[in-house]
Length: 184
Image (cartoon, rainbow, N blue to C red; front, top):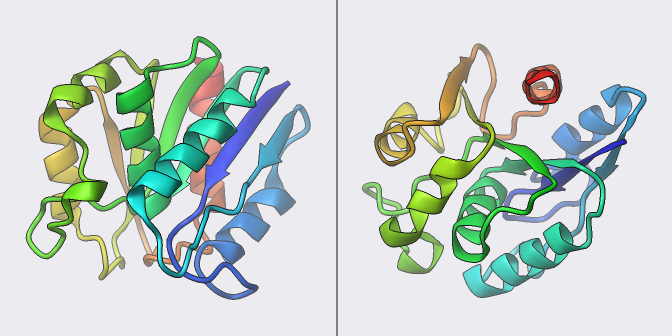
């Protein structure tokens, strides 16, 4: 059985907020043979990088099955930073990010959230890295994917037509990405 570890976006995660609609749609469409874990990250309304990294690492180390990580927005950049810092678990099959900001891009200069270049090289060893971004996302723009691709040439990138930053309707695309990782 494959576990999907979902790390949500910043902000409130009550129904209709943050990643909640996306998560609900993922749960509803998850195929047999997969289970979904979605821990609530600390202080989502006022996230602190170190707390999120610690919580993400705790969630990762708690999974014994083969697994895929899905990170939405801040959740995606936190996943990458966590894996770069702590290394890649042997049971990790791949990572899917959605609308993940590249910290250090103009308007996104928050060093605590940035992926340290000296640690980013560890991510080149990921079995699969699929980075998705909606073409209607006005929060995280396409240049963020370009910046990731420059330091992570192993990343597969895809634009999702009609998907905004909240990405409530992106569940089929995420499940297709997970399926391609599973089939690899």
